[in-house]
Length: 133
Image 1 (cartoon, rainbow, N blue to C red):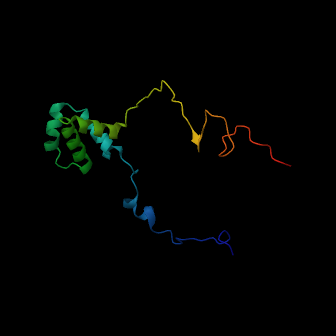
Image 2: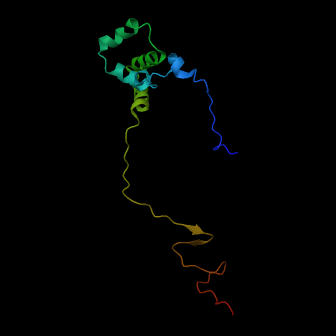
């Protein structure tokens, strides 16, 4: 018998699973509120007064919240850190380049360059002899 012909019932009694244990059911999964980017943007948009007292008013903070708060605090005084953390959360800004002149390439193979006529190997003769039939 093949697997398709065999009908299996892995839970014949129908007990267990999320019906009997709803506490094991996922509440929807991912929460944007607990991402570093969200928390960083939240702290950046706070007023200075609210930002300064947030840490003392929220003793039950998560690690993500504390990391984001510390990042914003440090970024207020260090420009390089501000630039780095903003590039990581917002993405690198677009940097456009303009090519005004295409450089001429000189390719060579052995002693021949693309500016010289082809020669028979090693003779320097631009008109090699015709092969004998």
